[in-house]
Image: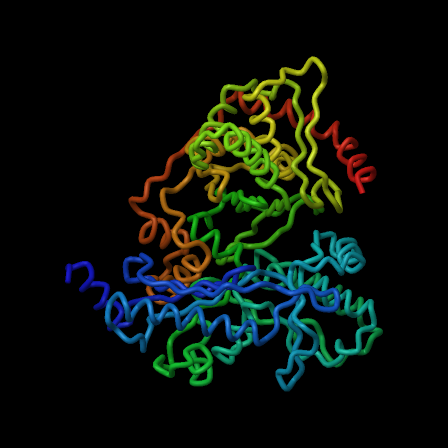
Length: 535
């Protein structure tokens, strides 16, 4: 056995480990890390949400069988690799998709099926709360779901004793503690960055708004307690240990960190919790999270405000569409190569086309593309139609064609980020890039740098994503020194020595993208016409 293997085994036996489990929309993933924060074992479980009576949901059975399967697979991985039966762990953390609605009565029974973030049934409530709070309340937020249920006159509302998120529910069942990390809580109800707790002025406004309903609860009675990264959030109870590990090997008493949302764990996993940093995840959809130094001057419907796991305010621009249309065009070239009986290597094909785009005109030569496979709230679209357009005298060549689709994949995000940079004068030192768009070295990264006019860094390791991020938060709670901030812990103990590739924006690219965006915004009526006429 190599020394490294023996050291890892020692960490497992002596519980110098941390376990992170994250519920993503299609996969539940468990990652165990050692005392050096490196992933040493993992387990996962595939799952899918279901549309039940018009509601996107997962059943409680889906949740528990999925959690148990992911943990069982992790324990089996530990046994197979290190010949150790997992009985103790240094610390545990749970995270999940944010937002949504899980309402329980005083007996702990679920009152209505879990309403996930995917549901868009709370438009009226979200709009009224935006006006009441002067704060953007997206439809997926828990408070929008609660108020919509009140507006609908739903019978169950009077019986609510506890309202939480998926991560908060798991945490409660594991520890008996009704608490939530501030990042996940910030997707339930607005947070005051000064107190790192629910905004009391808005809590009072909401209580006054529903006073005439004579509910037996006030808002704070039913919301989880808010905790910040590093605080203790309880221990794994006997019941929790049995629920998590059906084999019965896992001991109770393990410290558990505050449960977090997938946005917060993504920030931890990309080392972007510090003010003036941010991260952008670009794949099927794209979102950017920018950690703010101060509050914005006003509310913008294009920007969600959430927080880092340690309570700094974060502006989030989220777009439904990113690489789907780009990938569809690459597939057309794949079909052409197959029709010509040419061998197809998809990595080479993507690389060739992406690099070709870099030869194009900085403004794409007058070509215009809209990548809207689905609706796009930032620009006011409920449905989308992928669209490519050009004038007869546009410079129509392969380089400009590919460049226009790369620009298009980030155009809507740029509209949201321009609000931050050009209207709110937010300053940013760097953005961490991760996701499929950044796989071809240097291309997506330089386009992103041009869109944001900010240096973009891509790390060699994106780690294990959110499950790794929540394991890091569990390790921070367990191992931090007196007064050590989360940012310092991540910088000095997790990411020290990990050099990413940094790319500064090219001024000519920035000017070209700005020119493209002018045409993009001016052409949005074309996209609207396409939606209306192509039924």
